[in-house]
Amino acid sequence: MKLEVARPLGLSVLAVAVFLILVPFLNVGLGVLPIRPGVREWRFGTWGLLLGALTLPTLGVGFLALGGVLRDNRGTLRVAAVLSAVLAVVAAIGLVDFWAIGSSFRKAATDPKLELLYSRELRRTAMIVVLAVPALLGVAVASLALVKGLAPAKVGAQDTLMRASNPG
Image (cartoon, rainbow, N blue to C red; front, side, top):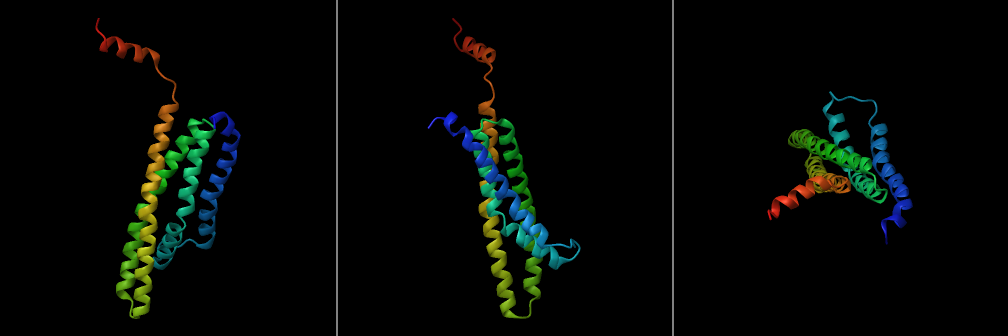
């Protein structure tokens, strides 16, 4: 299938991407109100919800990049690259804070069932982040490579290189 045929589909892919990126964050954002970053329990719960909801935004950023390719739009690819890199960094930082708070809660737990619950939650959330961060960074690198590939070729520079390699 030629890219021109798929171009109208790109707008639909972009709409799905925006949905997949925004809805989980809005859902978590509304669920953690009122904001209390000084309370460790609130931070632990918020990071757990945000990091647990990372799968759909990761898929959404991939769709955003795909929509940029289908629409032949460098701006969309740049947005996908920046957004995926930001999500990867925030996820890594969030996992560190989440793990530190959760480990202290697990050690302070007096009930073995509660300690097991904290352990499982820490592992489950870490697994999501460990799988999402490379995917997000892959989208960032691929999007930037595609942006560079969509840039117009510099004929003058190519001619200079050709003449330099053939000195006769």
